[in-house]
Length: 548
Image (cartoon, rainbow, N blue to C red):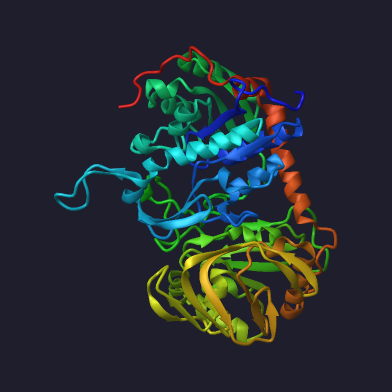
């Protein structure tokens, strides 16, 4: 490859849509892997996801909010993330409503029916209406066209499954996008779940003839064992569908990128049935699975003891990736918890961000975790609140925007009063703390008035061993992270010493390179390149019965 793909039709760069048989099939990591593989060849490549449903978001340099998965895919492509890469972001606020972020800015709160549309209604006589999603197809295709105009290739990620026949009429992220942009589709299936052959066949057979004409092949993900044992099945699948499998990617630990909806952390499943996805309950709707553990596999502890971090798995938890940098430190064990007794042996308790601050505060009180956190503070044991967690640590919350609960008492551990504003703060702040440079990003409606404290802390404050800030991503600043961990270890009485050489950015790059290696070593890159360069192949057969 000479660093320049042949432009389709001589006008725009090539394109490819990575779809999946299910949610969490591996679309995000495959998209990132293809982006990194192409970038290493000198190709100007960009990621794209027309519509993302995620509480895990990021702020671009121009102040636009997009899904963190697209920000990481941009890093894989070695380009700066922009709002064009994720024009529609849905941020769930309940089972039945989400905030709609369009081109990086919030434009309102909509119910699932108000967004997707549909016939009939919840009350007799309600007229059929079109949803907001249907109206956004032109915006989405314009963004994709602009990326294709300025890049050699654009690798698009689908959402859920393209065979969600209940949502096909208004689809703008799977086959609706592929049809509008005339780009080929590769379907990824997670063989670790089982039933991958049925999933590939069924996904194809449930699509209309026009949609099937764009499905160019399959990718098997998370395979364990001898690939030769799989080959007879792949041959039969090709005979049944007329489409080849373009690669079998092996199962490998630690290859996930920043998850779009918390699926990498068992407690954090946020997509709801009302929004067209069937998934385990989100926080606050029953007891979540407990005990997800993230810990460094890079090296043993640098000091004599490990440091234990407990992250409160609050409802609608957002940007839980803030603690990834802690988990990357040798000797730091990060655990997501939902019971008061699980805070007892923690050296640091983290209250993370949340899309529902008041709801999360009620959840902490219901479970006795609020009292446990207050006891920790009184004993001088470390607590860190980030964004929504920071707001909960304050004295009062005035919220007529998010929960519309009015004035609510906070935990009272920091001298802070929070008032929710209609306009969302989206920023990329930089500064210093604990004598070290720090960068971060802000995504919040709550405006904090800090009235005291022992010291200022990243536009928040510290009182004793309780710290609070609105800044996400601050722990990715290596010097600051080590300084904070030294303070935590001292307050906790642990003989823990941060490793001096841990560079979180370098670890991220290594991870992205491993994704690129997976594609380069285990996928048919020549076939992928042909699809990107030449577009949809002719003569792909129809697999009956087709869409209802």
